[in-house]
Image (cartoon, rainbow, N blue to C red):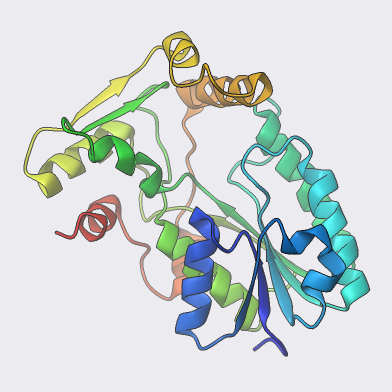
Length: 264
């Protein structure tokens, strides 16, 4: 166990919320940190026994941001951290993934006791489309490519494990679901869970850029378009063995996640 509370960066966000819940289920005190608290990161981290670090999505300079947090952890005397990276971090075609690879290097050379988590895309990312009047899986990339889609709750539990149990210092864990699935497979599972047909459809990336992506910062839009092109070509296959070992059980499959999220 950690000697003090676990400081959770982004505790109110989609991922951080699940990390906080998983830690709380183990009786571990949590110090939630948002943007306001991190204006003075040394003060924010002082007294914590460990920290969970996750950068805002598509941050323009993640190495600099997390590097500053690492400096603050050292100054505050916090010995332990888990860094939330991404599956396939060293993929030069995806700039925001490559930024996480560069940040992983900083974490490994920080002098702190570290663990790196590399989760695949979350099953939960597809829920908004399934909640529509006509449920569908519509994405700007191929729906037949393999992904190791992972349950966000499983990722939160894995984070709690590596922050509170021994044997994880110096480890890098790729976190994928129990089997590789395509987006078409997700639509099939959703059809069964929801009891109505759910289609899987590839949207034209240019149409996405002119529609949902039009209001985005141009850099963020370009980074996402690069990611969609990568997914089009390769998907994001991610193994499930590390997560199974961390949880001591099989990770939740897509159908299980959908049933839970839809209260079925």
